[in-house]
Amino acid sequence: MATPLTAARLVAALKAEGCAVHEVGGWRTNNRNHKGPWGPVHGVMIHHTVTGPGTDVVGLIYRGHSALPGPLATGCITKDGVVHLTGNGRANHAGGGDGDVLNAVIGESYGTYPPATHEHDGSAGAVDGNARFYGWECENKGDGKDPWPSVQYIAIVKATAAICRAHGWGAKSAIGHLEWSDWKVDPRGFDMADFRRDVADALALPVGLWEGEDPMPQYVNLGVPEGYRLAPGAWDSVEFTTEWADETGDHATGGSVFARGPARFSGSVSLHIDGLPPGAVVQARMSEYQGDQHRADHPIHEIVGTGGGTFAVVPLTKRLPSGRSMRVRLLNQAAAPVTVASAVLTVLVWKET
Image (cartoon, rainbow, N blue to C red):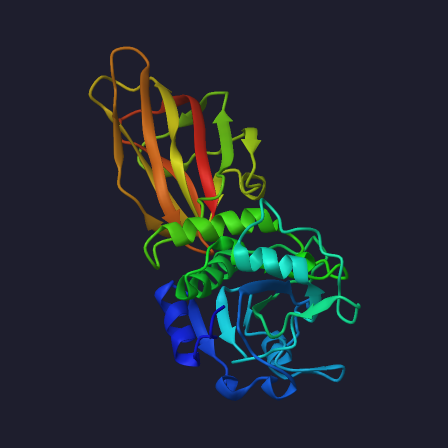
């Protein structure tokens, strides 16, 4: 049994967990408490909004609609990761559900998933969930195709962990609407067992330290299999004419481009240069472009000629802002042209939002 958090305690808990919080005007007195009890509370319920672009989704959750007055949840978590607080108290989000599920949540006594629900709003054995659960309505079409941006998903985990931490609950106090009512399918697009594992990871760390799992990087492997002439005296972008792998899809829109922001990447380009006299230098560097406009250069790596063919591995590591693309450029400082016999680029790219 737990007494609901006050508005001030809820805001403090969310901010301590690292959530970006927007207090919608009037939210602290916006509730349905006149329709029934609010509390004791036992958990947090996750929903999707079934809304698309152009919808005033925060206003909808605050006010409700003709068939269901607001607030429709404690808060609305939008795709940009902001937690918009819309209600303080009872809200029309959970409806009726299964008492066996409620007992399993109270005791945190289930395994990977709560027991299967056999009740819904209006069924004979339904239990009132609006009195017992905080609710997060999370902006998504709910069609199984609309993506969940990482910044939004991380905010949902953090907001849920904030409430659980404030009450001393574990991750099994968080359930999806589909686990409460056999009429519901939300949240659609991620698995609640995985979600609870992330909440548990957040709760296992000191408050505010969890930042989500690092996403799997995308692999880029490009090359210049045939030699080309590099004249002296001018910076020249390497044109990667062979694409062995490009999971990011960025190379297809520019032969010299290997990454586009927002992203971070780490890897290298291996160069084989023929005809570079001993002691002469070819310089290599990363350069940022915006469209076709050169915007910024990064530190130079010098490749010094040897008696035979000259080989070098140039590191490529950087965070790239939105709207920028990255190229590798070479400058032949020798007195005569040299041949770039091959260039093989291999990087891992983490796309950012």
